[in-house]
Length: 365
Image (cartoon, rainbow, N blue to C red; front, side, top):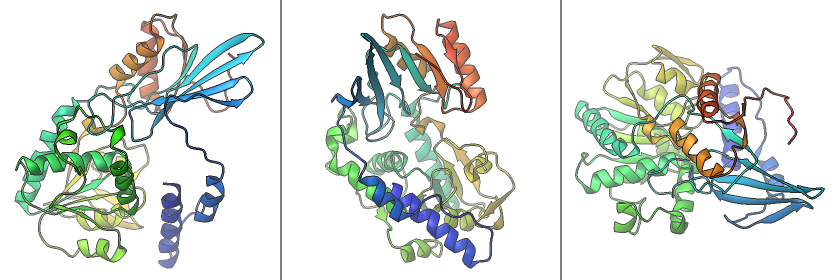
């Protein structure tokens, strides 16, 4: 992912410079990633390792994306022990493919995400039906379904449900393109780790290969990607990045946004000031790759695919961490102010002491 991000930053800067448009220099380059990787060590869930004397770390499955982890730090000093839990991104129960979150047992303090702390998601099981309806309706108009999707997690979940819909003959026989080298690589990693799948899922139990079926096509080569815009007829195109800020999705949006037959399908969180958020807001004119583009395509938002827990799920996860112990001290991070404010109020009603730290704030346990 780091290599791909560096590559995208470099290529986007080159493209904009070549066309005489303003651009920012890449934050880091591919050569920087190679140096960073020498500092990495893989650690399985459940294994406790000593980071430095007196500080031990254990990872538990956060259920967010493949490999996502909640971090448990057990710290001992002067015969006093403190457990600090960092939630990471907490996933949801019932999402396709991966296992449900596995909250750690007990905490004195929790640093906790709050992405969707002000809302509840539709049931995850309803998303496949809605996805099928959007594909059918758009195909009937002769349009294409353009999906900005995170390369790790969201792309594989959408492919999983499209596979299930295809097997059930609930969508027409149209091509489905995964147009993202990173998503293709990530899908390969998923395929190599079936032990991490939720084996209670029907499709996991029924098929040997979740990510390959007759309608699916993986377009790694850039020329194959460009050729998609010249194709005629309905299709599904899934490409990164998930917030439509970079990557091949920009070219598909520039081509497809003005087409009233097509649908832009949003399946993940869109941060403020991103192109994805402007699409969700249905702004009539979008700026894509330095050009103004009319938004005439339909916009559909399926928040139920979010890999982030909603406020009920976050409260339930925290309740499982607490167990029968006194409530831990809570610091909320990774959320916009309305989400943090709403989740703070909910948790305080349940007896938690909650802080929303500002940049530079310090706390002592």
